[in-house]
Amino acid sequence: MANNSFSHFMPDMWFDHCPVVVHFEARTNVNARTFKFFDMWCSHPTYKDIIDQGWKLEVKGCKMFQVVQKLKEIKRHLKKLNREAYSEISVRYHEAKKVLREIQEESQAQTSTELSLKFGQILKIPSCF
Image (cartoon, rainbow, N blue to C red):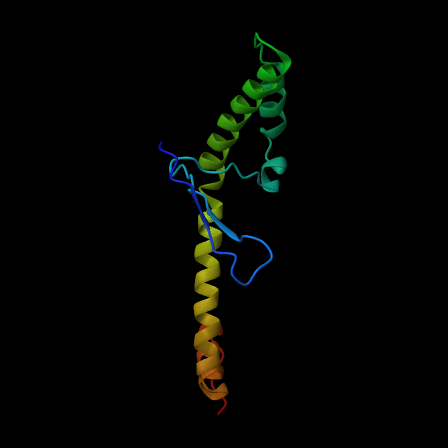
């Protein structure tokens, strides 16, 4: 990837120094996603086994290389656990949050009578208005 960073030196007419504007090229890797650890994994019955097996893995190389390889192996198994047991819960969380926001916005737009009728229908409560 080419380095497209540059700097622009501004004139020092009104300043006792020469201001400079520096532009750095933003390097982003669209394929890389950050690894997120979910506390709920700790309560899964196989969690401890996954961690134990990952740390018992035999890896040759310097100590830092060994740690990185063990963490990568644990990450691979935790991602599999998340996919199989929790079905992308972070996505479901954001979807539920969006639905909640829509309901709250809708409820703010309606009158209290309309809301009472709507909640009565949801809860199967007869209308008393």
